[in-house]
Image (cartoon, rainbow, N blue to C red; front, side):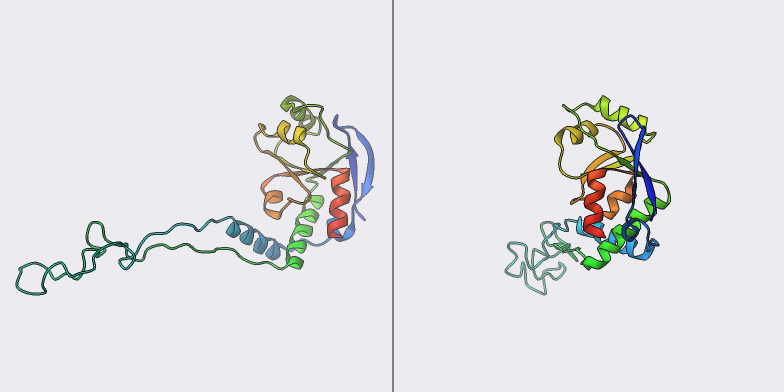
Length: 206
C-alpha cells in the first residue's frame, strides 16, 4: 500500500499514513475521467435561452393585403421573420443539456484522479487545519510552509474560518468531501486534505 507523510501547518512531518490501495493505488482510467468531466460541465449549462417563432409572436392574424394587384410582394402575415416585430427563424428554445453518469463510473473517475494525484506526488495530507478567525495571512503562511500555491483544500466538513481564509487567495479553493468532484480536482495542481478528510474519502470510495 502506498504511504504518504502527514504534515502540520508549519510544513513539518509529524507522521505517515498508508493510503488505501483501492482508492489511491489503481491504474487511472482516462476515458472514464473524460466522460465524467464532460457530464459535469454539461450539467452546469443552464440552457434557458428562448425566442419566439412566427407562430408564437402576438398579432399577424390576418393577411395584410390581397395577394395580387397591389404591386407589393405577397405577404401572409405581419409577423413574418423578414418583418420588423416578426418571429425568429430557427428560434433557440430551452434545452436540458444534462448527461447521466452511472454511480460506478463516477466512483471510478474519482479513484482514478485520486490515484493520479498520489502517483504524481500532487497530494498533501495535513494533520489538521483550523483558524480561530478568518485570516488570509495565516492561510498563505500554511501554503508557503508546504511549498504549494495552486491547490484545492479538502475539508471533512464546512469550516467557515478556513473557507473565508482561502477565499481571497488566487488559484486556491476549498471544498468538503461531500462536494468534491473530478473537475475541481483536475483544475488545481495540488490536492490538500486533512487526515480526517482522507479517512472519510477512504470510507466512501474504498
